[in-house]
Amino acid sequence: TVVFTPMRDLAGVLETLEEVAPGAQVVLGRELTKTFEEVSRSDVRSMLASIKSRPAEERRGEASLCICLPSGGGGGGDDASEDALDLDVREKVSQAAQRMLSGGLTRRDTTDILASLGLAPKRELVKLVLEASKDSKLGDRE
Image 1 (cartoon, rainbow, N blue to C red):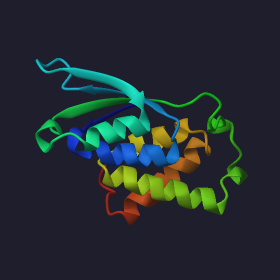
Image 2 (tube, helix red, strand yellow):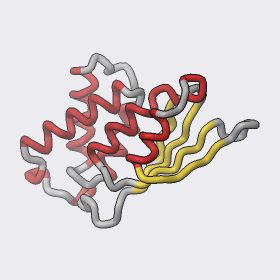
Image 3 (spheres, rainbow, N blue to C red):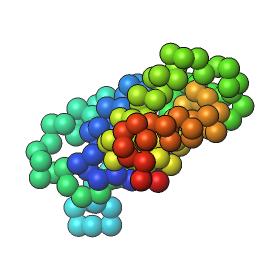
């Protein structure tokens, strides 16, 4: 999954990703096609620590984040049973969606990230993300 986000929102996106997919590997492209282009790769926890340690002036501009999930994690995609989304998982997914949306991700990017984890059918996740965006008063972001 590829996500485009402002650098100022990147720490929040990575915090949420670490919570829902702690084994994920990420590739960060910063200021691509510009003089000070930067590309780095690490696990989500290390990338989060690196971003948080940067001075504020280095947290400007645009970021492209490629998220690579560990093999065998989740699995299900659209074939997962809707019954598999129990109340505990539904609550965790809703909370993660709210954090991603408040971190600057669009509803579409949030849904794609959650769907790539294989926790539930995408159509169910679309509903949960839409509910989360209304709860967070972020419903105007597609």
